[in-house]
Image (cartoon, rainbow, N blue to C red; front, side, top):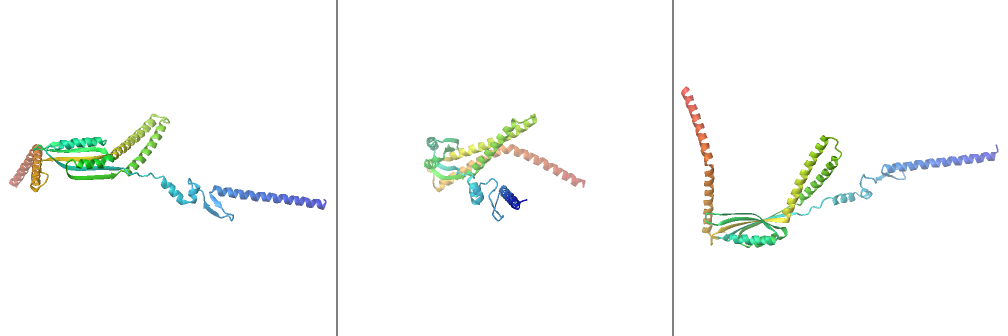
Length: 302
């Protein structure tokens, strides 16, 4: 074989060998990079692993900046709004016959404010003086003005306002309601998949329990809504004789009359309890006689 031709063949074989070797090395490098991507880790040129960029469901921005994930989670928390329930109590005195006027003025004031009288109790003592209590419901925005105007209708003895924030409870109720609604939808979807009567009965039982609890939660939310929207004002009025409002002896007289009313109430209670007291006395007498006779017989036998 011609030496020149032989050298050409060797050059061609060497070139093909170099091409195959380069292709093999390139393929291995591509596979290594692909594997490193599947593992979720960046590989440096020296082959060392860097910071992972894949963190489950977190976005790449949250994975690189951990504080961003915390801010995103915090932004999903429900905002607790202030839901304030107001309750007020006013005690006042009025001269004989003055309650009727106070009641009329209070009813007109509450009605003009968009409220109403929820409850009313009144009674007369032995002297014909009225002792009454009115429970008024007024819109929350008109509560302060209504309480100020009502307090000026008579001789105010005391007043008190109590407030409570039910915002946290309302947020908890909303979360429970959403959970129950999701459970209700789940069991409703299972009804069409039931294959036996027993499965249908079981699904219905769970569904009824969930719907009952959902109604209870919704009822509590509605109650809190009404309490927040309408404040409660309790007005207590005691009629007194003219000139009784002040003075030491007038106070002593009122104290004695209150003591007399208490004694009459006690006597009435004893009257109703008298038959039971008599029965208890008879039982005690029988037991006492039996015990005494037994002791006497024991002493004689000894």
